[in-house]
Image 1 (spheres, rainbow, N blue to C red):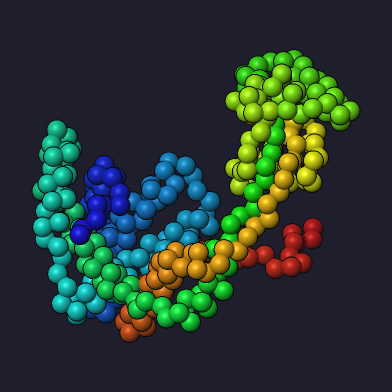
Image 2: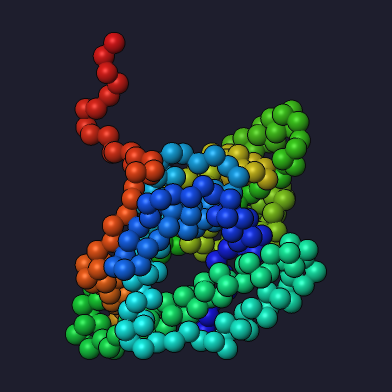
Length: 333
């Protein structure tokens, strides 16, 4: 099925206008076999990609340099994929393409820009949708890999243990003294002092659950401040950093959070656990097929690139920054 365009209509319209107004370059931008990609086509594709990636911000030069090469390779790959799809006898899904076009017609029926540029833009939109359809079909074929044997699945499971490991969980109690983020500093200072006083009481043996019920402004107050078991990363960064330092039964110092000042106590820490293969077999199979499919698609692209090397004019590309070597530094003055 043809996919929707990867860029909005207005961006497409502006890119087409830019391509029409761009100066003509005698030399082609790239050659892929007997197919020529013009400089105007590259400039238009790069403008669309840059708008989607950087919006209106000023990107760092190295990001622009990397994107120039990414867009160029993507355009070359589109040609290679189209040729391979043709060799395999694949055809665009005409019905899906027309359905998508009808959707654009309906969506932009009131747009004066669409009415004024429709005839000029429509061939390019159709061509893009047809290329997307061929790419999708070829990708689907390439990613059809055989089910793993029991031995292959076992090997995949053992090599990807992190994917089948239940992450660490901690059971935490919290006393939260809420403060409106826009409150003056004096209010934050007073709340910090209140948190310090509660912390001293806890250190002296006061019952955490009772003080939580009495002082905490969080919904967990009714449960004595019990947040239950939470996965690593579910707490705010400042809270997570404080809890990471605790052993079971220990208290944190008062912690400043976006919503106020909190004191935490770690009740229990569950270490990460590798689930047995029998418990995650279907998930392991799905991940195996996904990964092997991606590898097969990448291998096909590499095969097509080797079979039909492309020549790309990179004379107008920004240089890629090189990684600093150990010992590199500013030149002596």
